[in-house]
Length: 120
Image (tube, rainbow, N blue to C red; front, side, top):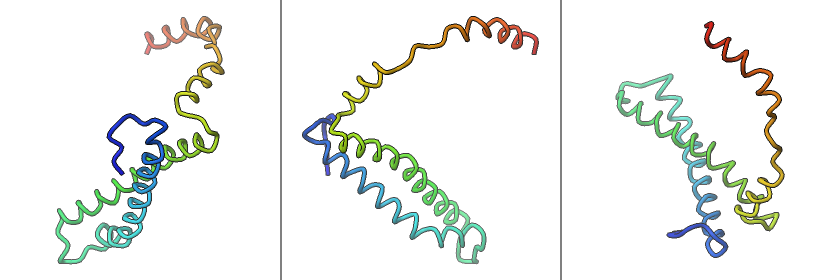
């Protein structure tokens, strides 16, 4: 699905479906490429050239990286949907609950850290 706009209430469904499709397709590609990638890296045959082996390994790892990054992102959006909350509402709520920084820690340890860095 084409979003072609900022993500809001009217196109949030299309955005989440796009992320889900991307996750499923990359996962399927990684599963299908696993055996061939292991064979190309560890047990290459004569008909597998070095550029082909490098391309196969790079494509496999790109799929894995997309899975690792898009999975939690999609999970975050599904949690927002289940809690009936937009991302902006979540951010506004989390800013209100943020604890103030511990200034006492900085007052105690900042001079010794500076001296430590200057000595080494």
